Amino acid sequence: MSATQLGDVTPVAVAPPNLERRDLSRHPALQLGLPVLFAAAVLLLWEFLCRAYAVPEVILPTPSAIYARIISAWPFLVQHAVPTGTEAAIGFLLATVLGIALAVLLSYSRWAYAALYPNVIFFQLIPKIALAPLFIVWLGIGSPSRLAFSMFIAFFPVVIATLTGLNATPPDMLRLCKALTARSWQVFLSVRFPYALPHIFSGLKIAVTFAIIGVIVGEFITAQAGLGYLILFASSQAETSLIMASIAMLCVVGLVLYGAVAGLERLILRKYGH
Amino acid sequence: MISLRGVRKTYASPAGPIEAVAGVSVDIAEGEFVSILGPSGCGKSTLLMMLAGLENITAGSITIAGQPMVGPRRDAGLVFQDATLLPWLSALDNVLFPIKMMRLPREKYVARAEELLHSVGLGDFMEKRPRELSGGMRQRVALCRSLVHTPSIMLMDEPFSALDAITRDEMALVLLDLWARHRKTGIFITHSIREAVLLSDRVLVMTKRPAVVVADVKIPFARPRDESVQDSPEFTAIVARLRGMIEHSIKVAA
Image (cartoon, rainbow over the protein chains, first blue to last red):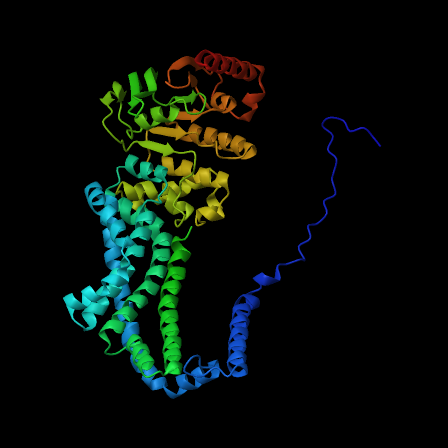
């Protein structure tokens, strides 16, 4: 062994890291395949148990019976899904516009914040479903009361998320803007709002599911049309497979609306994500 | 010329007023590069924020070119510890950000911004987003951004202290070169003695809270300088002298 002197450079052989072992659960095919396989397994088990124990269809129809019902009632289901989906979408859009507007007001006015924010939180604490009948009393049994209720229920997550987002700008960035004598509208448009976008979208994804809940609750009470009405009607007829078929349709409506928001998020965060 | 006369800063707190800066009086000539050296949390940053017009002065006065300081001034360029770039803008657009915020015509400054990026070795990275750049590259973009609107003063608040040691040494040389080209009045806050000596015409040593200037040391090396300055015995001697002053001031405070 030779002595190493100060300043000598000894080349060191570096073993290549083992990159071969890859985590299989991250494979794209499995990411889509695994949840589908799991759901299929649950449906199969459901089918099997219902048959094995001869569960009456009124209590729990088999997945195959529900599928048959979806096929037979398809035009009917679509006809009711349209008002539910449309009203949820409009309720969600109203909640988005008003929620962002209120959050902007709260973040720019100390007075508005001091006066309104504690009340916003207080309202958040009320189980909002309990207020649904009031909307019927005020706005009648038509579309306006369902839209108003859907908006009301979807509005809070938008406000809270936007408010959090608007406060997410690094303080030094705001100092820089101030030092450059930027106007507050410039800081809002060029800095604070773009910084808030990832937060806003996480709020919107919650809000879109809330908006659907709002419409369904409205339909339960006003009972004229829509999937909520269909569920209530089917349950009065003890048509459990139709209830299940309506719920499946509701899932489709939910997926479409959520997918639209998530798609928009992807598009916008490709630019503004950080 | 920047003149500070008896500048004080006191913050209100539940336990009574806290004095962050206690009576600083200094003159800084135009085109001079001055480092403010001191331990962390000694009120150096507060002093810099007052120079940027972002903090009120509790007592005393700051005048720049004879004009009393009243608020943010457009002729100052700021650099922070973190690069604070906008993640969705390219390096070039980040450099041009002050132009947008100051509502100046962008097209008049694009060439200057590109030239600044070229001069710090980022000519091939102008369209890259901050997340595609290394920490040192991001801080170079921030340096260019502080110069794009042709300010007369550069205010730098520990701009390299979030970087690793090797990048940090490299960045000091980038700044040395950039400053040699532009010759702005520079006020540079740091807790690295070597960095301060390498870059500055003068080093002010500050004590811990409340901050006062305990020493004002002239750095005699001729300009333009390069990294070889650090190898001279004189450099080592000044560094040792400054270290002694800082250690002494910490002992006195404790």
